[in-house]
Length: 85
Image (cartoon, rainbow, N blue to C red; front, side, top):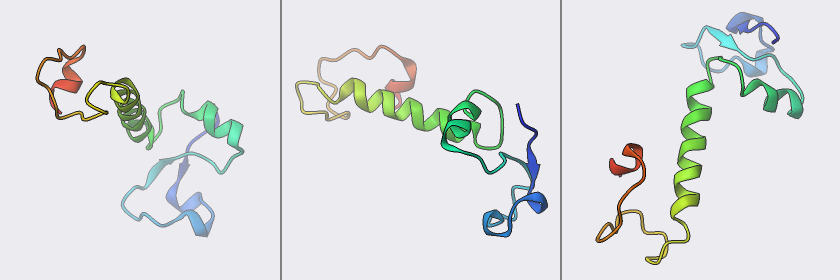
């Protein structure tokens, strides 16, 4: 894996969050970005939380109540993560 950058090492146009000082992925191509999702960096939690949300929405988009995640009359949830909805 490529080394991670500090805020001051990034190009000026990418230095917009002064509170996150380290852990930036280097500017890279689309395929490098996809590969970087397998490594830990300062965006890892963001990536995982978006993937979990996408999976939950995809799992319930075809339900009989037209994707309404809050309609829980007779549905048992497969995961404790979904129960908090």
